[in-house]
Image 1 (cartoon, rainbow, N blue to C red):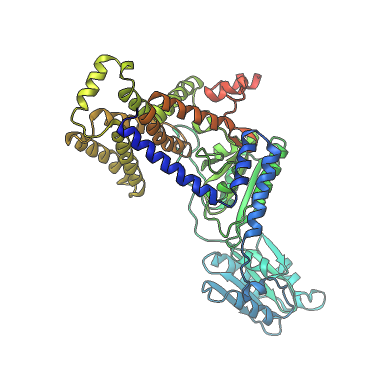
Image 2 (spheres, helix red, strand yellow):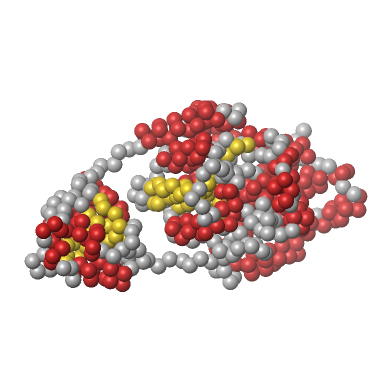
Length: 550
């Protein structure tokens, strides 16, 4: 028979399962989603890709068509030979865009020239020196005789900007103007010259604040795409480093780069990534995380299937291993794919220090990973259902500390873990000078006060504190989140079934990890399937000369 606590927990879990089942029944793509999961578990790469594309195609077909406005209709037009007509169309498109500047240049006995640019995005001094001044002082002989095409004269003789391009329609013109280009239109020309005069303020290259290292490079990616590609090109100065350009976002038209090393990256993997990027349908992209949710194999899995980093050295090393990187403008986080479970346990400076020290440090990380996942649930199961497995003196100490506690052990664990997560979240959101103080002092004060008030027993505070410290031992923040989430589930299972519930939860997690894939690569590679050659370097850290020999 179950105790009242166990019965109440079973009732709550049953209600949650019933609500979840009802929600799944109402989902339009429930059957297709189950098929996708089945084929992912079976490793059916072709069917997985086919079903994934089917879902994306169905989502595109079911998207409601938005009525086009007058400005959107104007964007579909080609540029006219009449400068005034082009100006009128552009003013309609840029209506109520106060930062867009129209500058009409009129010189005696010469055709008029119209400049359009966004104030704040272009370098004003460069524009005045290399575009505006030559246009104002242009020689009349340029537009006479063989130089009658002013647009060609502008491109070849008057605009002293390194990067220029020519467009013939309003859509391309508007897109480039919002990317720090100056549009130059002339009378009698059905095209526009675009000069790259970007000079907006941007963050300088700084040390990474997410992936700290003891040794190694200190630079990190910024929010500027071209700066990020430059950091990669500095590390891999080879023509084999390819950077393919994409534009994603119906409204934001965000520049995206696909980086890989030709001859090392798998062509099939590369084509699969291209297809998934082409099928991303979003109004706007503010960060690379928007793309991550679209391209990963199983978006419902708590484990990240795409590695995120803001370190150029980590990205360059991954490219040399045959992986692919996705860089997004306005985002300092780069997506690296495919990824595996053990990659989350690697630090950026593992290959900058001695191999024997790194091997020992990796063993500590794996132990801390296990502790962060199962330590609270193991404490609950041992103290509640299997006290005979504990040493007698230890059990007596725990029992003495819990004499005045009004809550069961599982409730104490959940409450204290919730408080710890809340303090951690508060520390992140607080100003940088106060955040660490709030996290550390807050945990000490709350824990001490709870123990003195006989609300929480002292061993619970020790367990949660040790678990929280262990969770920080996982080098990559994104890989620590699944352990923090699953820890609550294991505590509930241990509170209901003891060690049997804990074992059941661990087995379920292992089954999920074994069946999970990242772009066709098994998530537990090289453990399952076993690859001893790669396992030695991933689990420990072999010397460079031994890897070169093998």
